Length: 305
Image (cartoon, rainbow, N blue to C red; front, side):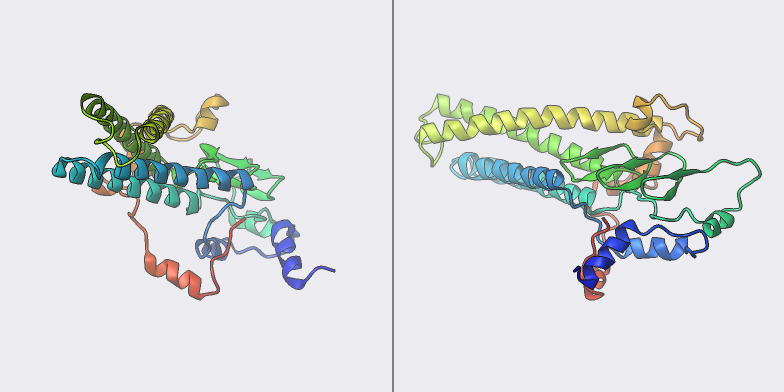
């Protein structure tokens, strides 16, 4: 026999509203805003943890194998501050991408009352998603992993354990940019470290033994090269999609645009918000600690799916 709490979760996920049931879209949106968004997907959670571990490994090798043993004080300080700042920005962007609602459409809003409130014109066609029982806005697509329709869904990325959509695309762009920068920085430091070790004594260029130093640097070099290649391509693809106001799904499906496109700077401003400024490259823009604490006081974080 299931407990009442378990039955409640089943009802929350599988309840199908009847035509005469009332549905308040404004209250539903408010409830979603009060929740901490997190996708409970095993593969996505493993990939997200791996991302953090790889960044931590890179920071360990750069700090303890390359910079601290260096005899050049300012070389160590400047590169240490730069690398760790990029690491913090990359991981912060990853968190904002993973924990931000990508633009999920409220489930179960395909009711007669809600459709009457839309004040549709005669002959106007609306689409209903049979999987999440919601009315699909224009450019929304259903994600089988998130189990929701996502506005302007670009793709589902397991590395951030979330969809990339209307509300979190800017954080995903920042994540790919900072990972590419930190990877490039790590490759440059690997090159300088290898050159200095070859010119001098291997026993003096690191506090670790020469074999361990070589293995750690080779792993970091391969990691940096692979992540630089992958994230640089993703960053370029995302910028191209934003400037053309076309998601990856729309491009792959060759969907003809039925909306008014926002090209180039208009598209960038719509995603990053406002005129170009330093806030565009900050993953902390719009983050409110007070609001997060209020969510916790109201009964702890709730998972949206």
